[in-house]
Image 1 (tube, rainbow, N blue to C red):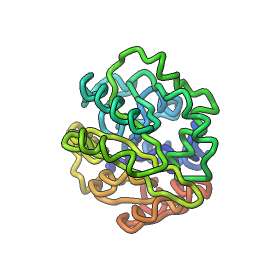
Image 2 (image 1 turned 45 degrees about the horizontal axis):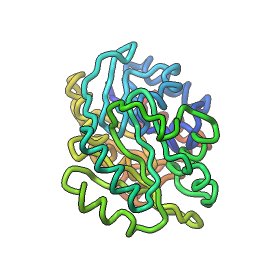
Image 3 (image 1 turned 90 degrees about the vertical axis):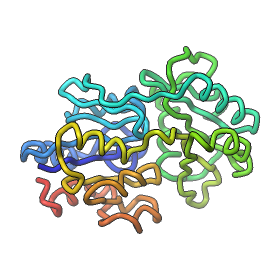
Image 4 (image 1 turned 30 degrees about the horizontal axis):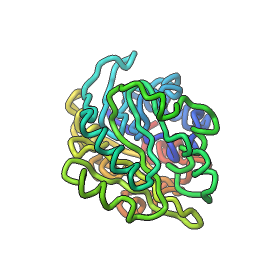
Length: 276
């Protein structure tokens, strides 16, 4: 039995979409029928990944590792580690002070700065995370205005800005407890974007938690990703795969590069790796 971990945006689906290619859905079904287990492993919070659950997985690692659930109804919570209210408030205070656009993610919803949409519309084509947020906002996928934030525990903060210096103060204030995971910038995009993620967790630790739950050695895991928030997963799994549409840095680290999400990459890699 293999445990298979799939990023969503840019890996399982086109960035910001909720419908995988038919070939990917079929490959997942065949892999599970063969006795393997398949998990989502994503930066999305549970609320934003929920539309994918109709395709049947064995669990998910969400919030970049901050919330891990398994079971037929995804109701067995293996890990749950939100920010403290003090951490959240400090992060938003120092980021907003420096003109950084923020989206905060809780288990049941997301809230973004009111002018984020206009900021994103001015950017060129970027990486999969920029495209995810642009589509999420335009498709009304439940991202509410920051002014409506209800105080729910927050797992991570998505950040966007135009100058790296805008993050200097936040790094000084938060750097001991949080990693600033920035995505690879692809021309002509000028938007610096990424996530502030608690050092207590990452996607790789989520993989280890699930391996322990099912008593499966790391050697029997396979991970698929495309961006730098997949780094720890790629470094942890027994065999790693980066999509052709992914980060050049991640491709260098992965054991294999498969065709892009739009070219049936997952299905072709599943077949090549004898997962189906």
